Length: 269
Image 1 (cartoon, rainbow, N blue to C red):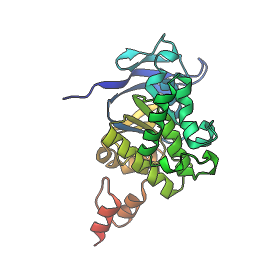
Image 2 (cartoon, helix red, strand yellow):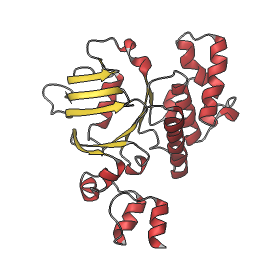
Image 3 (cartoon, rainbow, N blue to C red):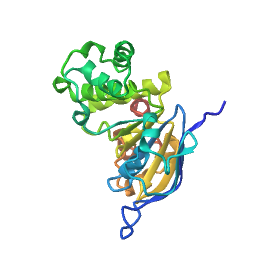
């Protein structure tokens, strides 16, 4: 059974004012329920502006953006914001509670969720992100990866239909980044959470269902992970760094296309 479209960009273009060049030009893509789509591009490619349009931070765009096949144009932001949860680059900017559990409960309080419901929801989402044992800790005392897990739990508690990760792992060390991406993969595959990941790091797209590459405000490439990595030279020309495994494979003259760490070891054995 085909999945229903959750988010659709239809010929979307955007400029910050009439005297500026277009930041986004004729963007078209569809994100279906339960998918993980990554949008990747170098700084200045238009990724952040695209996220602002989805979140309703910017409004005056050409074309149309649909959420569950309904246009967001001329619609009050409050009418569709409950569909979307955003996890930003710096989790410290999202913390408001004195402990992890109070921070996760904050958004629920704003939605006037009853104490009994909050008491059930908060432990569940903390278990989903493997932070239940830290529920009484102060968020500021956590590691970078743990902070980002709490930020994601706060979003999950509100049960959004779409989670946007806006450079959500860029401030983490390699181990923290790996943990967060593994957790997102679990939420997507096991719990059916729809994910839109916005990043400049090609190593973060490997678990995606599809990848969209932005360059100079336009869709330059679109396809599966394997499709995208067959264009290694083009990606490099767009200012994107290839994952370590693929850089090594290229130096050794091994296969083209996407290559995991284990596949690289197998090629070398």
